[in-house]
Image (cartoon, rainbow, N blue to C red; front, top):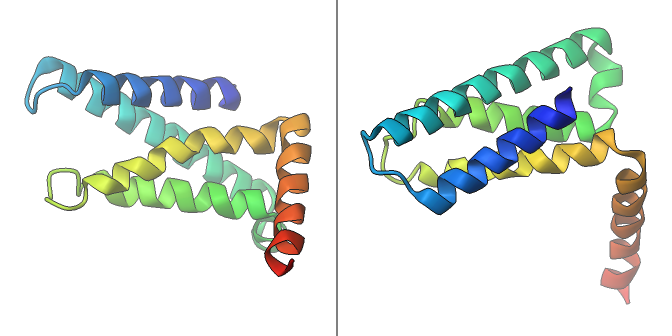
Length: 124
């Protein structure tokens, strides 16, 4: 279920960026309301995950920390969307799709391998 919500959120974000609805238009309000719904769903998911894994086990997994940061920034950005200069906060919401790597074992292996290879390449 969460993977479907992540993909839907990513598709809606892409559609919003492509269409660029005018401020105050019905389409702008629709995208804003859908974004709020997605943010609430992701907040609930992180809250359930945090509660189910208690405190220490939750923070010991890097993907959980990443999920928490993405959701926290999304929550902070919601009331600040109309403030000039804070529109870049919306960009972090696109990283919700990266959360799929936590759900899909094969993608997680690829990302972990790439991450492990970065350090030796930097030291070379």
